[in-house]
Length: 124
Image 1 (cartoon, rainbow, N blue to C red):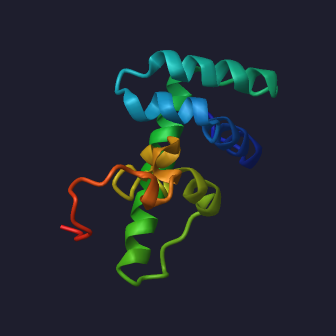
Image 2 (cartoon, rainbow, N blue to C red):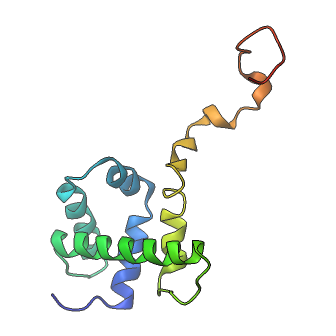
């Protein structure tokens, strides 16, 4: 297909940064329906892409992001990509052992509110 323009990629990332879309993407492999939604939203921005193009672009961006991220972790700064910061805002939390699960208010409570496991004050 034709090359994605900067604006198209930006629009794709904006849609992808929607919590709703993220949750759906995190939970599935068969994600045609999700990318059909994404394509429909792009259409509203006047961007004509089908779900396959959206999914391919999503996979490529994710792959590129991961390789840049792992290069950074290993101390190399030679690798970079255009939309790294935007993607890091979306994907940065996922790579850390699904930290996104902390969205529920369970983890927001101070520790003293949780029921003690035993009568002792030891942390075991």
